[in-house]
Length: 228
Length: 351
Image (tube, rainbow over all chains, first blue to last red; front, side, top):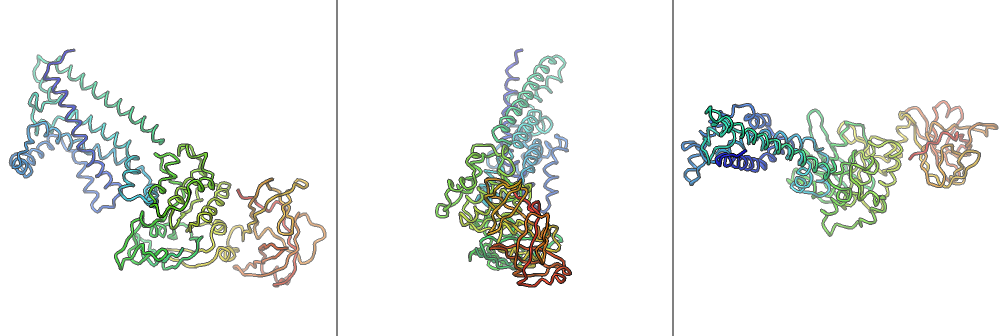
């Protein structure tokens, strides 16, 4: 199976976007999950609704909001344009779209991991002389690793499939913002390219299966080394 | 150790209001569940912040709402031991043990890890995984971890509640000796009177968020003799038994005690309920009980209609319990001489 160069670029771009979005969202996801699990916040319900909103909103709607926010006349867009940063219709827009859409999945998984940590473990570490940050780094972080791993895999996979929000903020420009789903969409709209669409579909399946396998292997390794 | 607590804390329907000056090296906090014992632990260790008041440990201010001081938990140097060992599951036994030690400032390090590992017999456990330890082993590691942090105060919050009876009495000597050997004062929180008697020298009784009494474990046990299921418990530490006619003969003061459930070649702790002792004014000629001790009454006390009789017998002491009419009928007064009969099976071996 030979793929045309545009498809190779689309695959590379998909991986780059998914990886960047996941890496970018990870520290925020960890911080938000920590806030929800360990801090007695007022209005926690609103925070949770806000975070989970992308899960229930149509991605197109998210894309449209992002466009309003980041577009030339959006309040963030104006600032960015003034400082010479272009986001809309670049791969960076695809990253932001993926990050926003996948964020709830990431937070959910990390949170599940954190919720299983006994509060007394943290109290024990503090009473043994660990500062707040020390305890976070040596107890909370290692014990959340499974959740972090699961969340990252989910988010990475979700980013690979991102379509609705991406097509609105990043467009469908071959070689620049065209990721695998967008390329498949292009092929599928012309009757003569159904085999091309199918071969990209197979690539998608292969990547997804690889991600799931990698997740399982890492999770097992983690279980063994952490003794959980 | 001198701990001054004068704090208030409201949590939902529950309110805690404690004003106490605690001094001593082995202090118990005794109360039923829901009495506020654990809240008190959280306030002292800095995991919870009082609404108002102040806490001083050995003259150092840990918390003062008036001065705006609230020392963070890691700066208080108060190590906690919980009901469940709470070992860090992702770390090895050794890393767990040294977690606090590594974080302890050099000038505060005075406990030698080797000595502690010896005392608590932790050497064979060091290379093991946390999940491969038994409940008792975990609790020993947790105790070692807390002591090795070189704390100013060790707070043990129901550390024996999750263990079965046998294990509990195996762990108690470790708890006591770790505190004594390394001169770490401790607060021992429990709802068990027996644990108070074995672990502490002073007891604060907590009820409904208030300290209702400051007493000794001995006084507390005497006071509760009538209500308590097994009366007053006498504890006897006996050693070097001889086997005679299927019974273990233990020297006890100048007496010999015959006990069914002994154990050869080792020191054992026995529990004897005050209700298992039968008193005779005159020597009973024939009796099935294997132990008959001649005693002198040194003290009598009242506990809810029951009379506690403190008996001296050849250099040792026992407390027996009888109902008031029996005391009147036998005309027992301080100085009376009596015979105490105890069945060989009445001694319960602990641990």
